[in-house]
Length: 420
View (cartoon, rainbow, N blue to C red):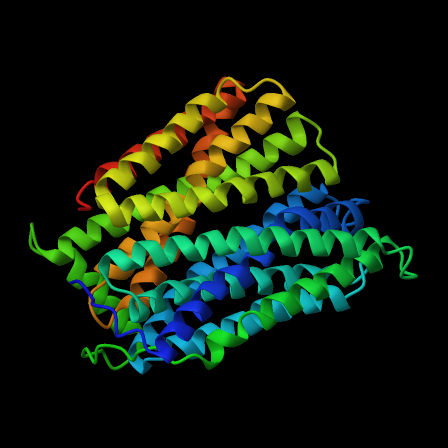
């Protein structure tokens, strides 16, 4: 199941750098989405309850629509890419769709509310699909242990790129008066700058030479490809490589879904409980990006040097510890301290699980493996969010929802314990 890296020719080195730049480019979407986009949608586009509901509800429904669209689309696109060896093409198309969503958001005036919602959904779906093929291409350029290091470098570059892109976008928005723009015009210009960042730094991956697939046999249609792959994992004999991969894939779904829910709840905590304004939220996000960068590199080094099992113990144990500490946060100073602790383990667990899935995926099925991982992550994140809210509603305590996240991470850890 291991995959040896190709000789590091000039083309091979360029392909690795181009792959790392994918994280650098796409992270601009992540940071701007949770700061400027959410503020634009809630405070400008839907500020006056024009659809008869709170702006926060519109935002939640918009993200839910994007998640549903991704869950439906990703497995089929991934199966198509595996059958046609079209991972690089699919990545380019998804990136253009995601950046195009941001350009549409920049072009549409605040009064064009349906267009704003469609643009946000398109950007989110493009990002989700692009992440699938960023992961599947990792197997083409790295071997077993090397994948951990390269994945960590990618996440570290992503935290740096996301922070720099957010600073640039915020500076563009802040200068809107000097540019002769109103507030809405300034933030829309920032969206256009973000789209350009995403596209420009993705160009190297569009022209890089990645290895071809393994030549494995595939079904005649994407639907049959999906069914055959899922069936092979379900029927895998105990102790087989496919059974071990199925356990790792399931554990990664639960873990990443819990992590994404925890990040979303952290942002909600910062905005609602501690009344952070826009600049304070940007500073908090930049703090997380800055600390997560060395955290991802350290975890990648530990996994390469000592193996994935101790790195896994560190990441999962650290995350559960952070969630326990979150129970006792009662001040803004403690919130910033929690942000630092969260950032230390944030990138590590994501880079580690991405590398593990890339290395352990059956040959010729990296695309559908990451496609199923993406869908499972979204579904487990939805379940975690429902459980979080349900516990909070039943007990009246915001902290009680943390029990659901801790339980989900613990189950994911139990499934992934087979990592060597």
